[in-house]
Image 1 (cartoon, rainbow, N blue to C red):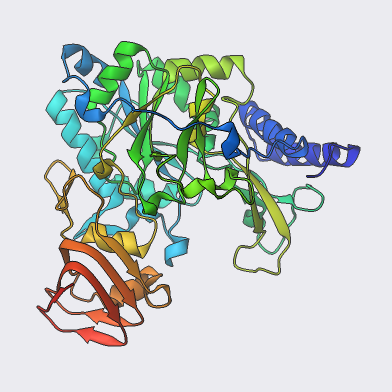
Image 2: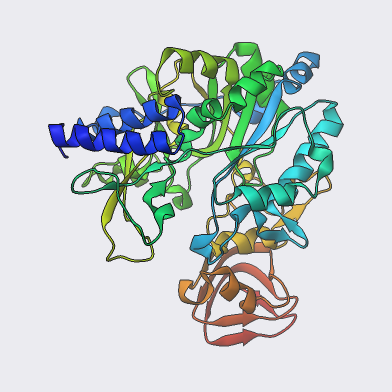
Length: 461
């Protein structure tokens, strides 16, 4: 790691000058300084397995008490906050990922709006929907939200995620890239949410309006519907921060698991595993995985931001890329990031609760998109996505990336819509296979292309 020298201190000040010119708030600059100092100080955020202990039994969602009048009071002091900064570039799209169609005529954002409006009506509460947008997603997302005027609330509909300079890997100087100056900047990971809430003024606005709780999740996880039972439990026990976790499966091995480190719970991401440490995929030892469904006591966050420059002291994640991700010959850069779930180890008194897999259904690839578009999930009137597969894991789908990775490619292979997966456990497709209308998959099926599956065909394995 680059030592802390006069040249690295100069590089830090150059990056800070650039952030000030970009009108970054003081709290955002303080957070960046801390990440930079972690980097040059050798604090790379690694968590060796010999420093960790597994977590025992946890409170379960289904064992929490039913909601009471007090719980409804807490619900009127809550806000639903969705992370909406991502573009669908990895899936071949140029716009916000949240605008991808999930069910006929319904995008992720449409369904989230449906969920929030149904909760408002059922419980008679305010419950605003707030997006954390990036500069890339803001305009299109707000335009899409405008189609739901009934969502209007007493707070703004969004705030902006921060951005900071990418740093040259060899000197740590902020990179210059006149070919496209927007590529000189990067978001500091979704751990930026705590600082951006304050820097944007959204935290102050929420507190002035009497909001005390935020339920935070990724916009592409339609299983993440605010559950009043969790809120009532946290409010009654004055828990400052909580994470929803699920029992691990082989599909979670690239996600983050929780563990004990001393007297605290911590989140360990794959990027925090030392090279040569094979323990990360040990599902028997590390039983619980982060869903990125988080609960934040806004009063506790407000206090912590007042006491600590830069907000909760989260572990550093160093993301190594080229300044132009599409040009591998462009200069190597470092992006200094943090994971929002890492607040589990940074906020005293943080808790976790085990939830069913149905609350964790993120769409990261077209494999995931096929599952949520299919009849494996049914969209109810209140916006809930109800599984046909019970409380277990959804059908496993692996589509050949050469033929299906990008959404435009994907669409051409399912011209009449997705096959039925309600009774499927596994679908693996090698090569170029096009599906006709009304195709049904049952059990475990593996296909090899090129091939065309006829309308109405039943494939059973």
